[in-house]
Length: 396
Ligand SMILES: Cc1ncc(COP(=O)(O)O)c(C=O)c1O
Image 1 (spheres, helix red, strand yellow):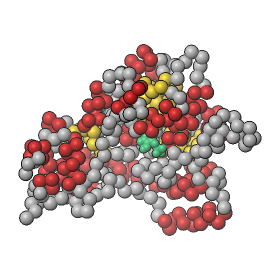
Image 2 (spheres, helix red, strand yellow):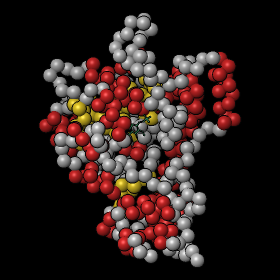
Image 3 (cartoon, protein in one colour):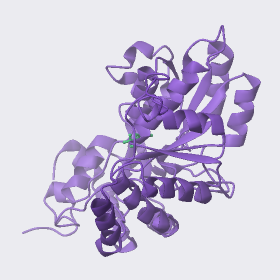
Image 4 (tube, helix red, strand yellow):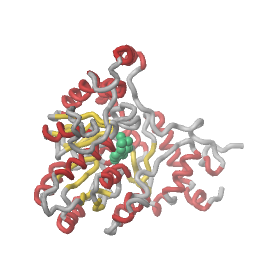
């Protein structure tokens, strides 16, 4: 006989059968998009057309920035911005960029691809964003030419503080805003601060193109250069200006992104509501701590992420993930292992990062779907915690 009260890992009934999806992208309806898709296909203009231009100008209006440049991915956007930074290195400046290790690996691959040495900086255990004290230390001792900060899971970095730190040490501020389309820092949309911010448009993000990215900048000259860069480095003269990429965002992708951008405010409001409900429903469970959101700000909750304190919860993060899986609840260990532990980046791991290691060992992102589902997830966490000793020991 199955037992409803026991965790599924110990023979009880799973809370969700079949299992939940990790994410459910909220997309425009097919009916809304098909007339435009048909027009694109019938026109034969599949790239470099009105939808790319429309998506760029609508993004500029939404973010309140001078220029937006659509690209094939956030990674290619970062690569091209960093390549533009390389062309601006002042004499005597070393090609080093300060970056958190607690980020998705693409932040680092873009840096290395563009010929920079990443200098890994600690993460703040509460906000999970770059640690400002450690960053100051790195700026003092390593003199990087730029800082690449990340709005971790959409939680906006304090761009005013970061900008003044960067100004003090003559470093440029760049932001990997992959998770941040729709985030607000002190009431303002993120996108304007720093030299450039690069957003991702993949299906787990807030504005979805399928695949794609968009670069926001106040610097018109940079925007012009990036338009050439995404076009192989060809400004139209067929006399290559520099070695760029084919990093264009197609018309079909741009068209989907336009439809998705129209839904952005309601998507972010929904995610915030469900996240708030989840946090309330899970309040008081010992050993669980949610990401702290930057004050007077709005995150997108690209992911709903918590840290498992093994001592108080009674289980390791990995064992908890197994117990959740048995309940039909998938989870993700973003960003574990942290980037300085990756095979390709170990050679750059020149500093001790104990806070980052601890955070990466404990972090767990859980599905954020709707409030009734959040109730089931909270129920699963409570019964797992109640039986934590048996689960950890592997006995029923
Ligand atoms: C922090 C961060 N940076 C960059 C990227 C890369 O984005 P894309 O897949 O659009 O290249 C991601 C992807 O999820 C990300 O999480």
